[in-house]
Length: 281
Image (cartoon, rainbow, N blue to C red; front, side, top):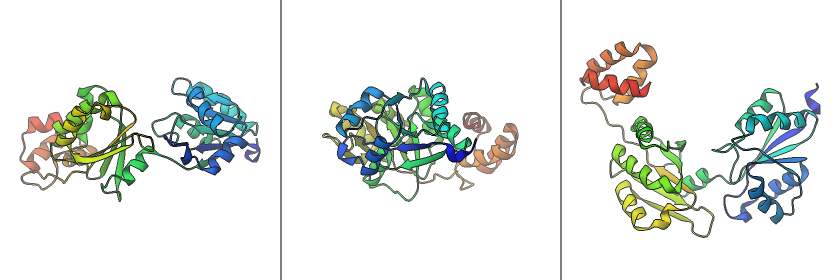
């Protein structure tokens, strides 16, 4: 089939709260396509009604994405156009759509970004933390043990780190960050961005935990956590962070040899390094 006959897939960003952030191009796109693939059709119906958009919707969420993508790809091959939206913000950022976009890309279907709101970029832009280099880590694991392991892996991350967090877990996550990174690490919480109770608060981990404990409102709504990158902590002799050293050696050597060499370089206990190497792998 000639790919020139394929329809186009539009990846459309929608407001994260304030409907005035909806771009004219996004509105025009949603009105002009044949179908809108929406994460939650009931939620998106409010947005479409506000802008008088009558395009039919098809549900595409985490539980049906692979099955529903087959149908949407067939529509695209028939020449129909589709807009992909999530409940809020830019699709695929912790939202469904990756499988559809990847398969459409493989088939040579034209994929068009319609940029707009993104909670992580909006939060970063007002955080006061370094923005020249940063990493997005999504949601931390729900269970504390796995969360602590993930935070340990990020102990020497120098870039500004951005996390999404569920309101009922935000306090636990902050306490785990404190355990791994210490009380003085700079952190910013951005909550309910563009909405009535928008809050952006910058302080240390220890102080933020106390603030969140005292005001339960800070444990509600959509939350972005941003943490300043680490100042590298050197080992006593090598000047190389232990995790960084182990990662380099593990990439080139079997585990046992990597640990033995790391112990010689860092003058640290082999047993401790072995346990850390297992975590890193």
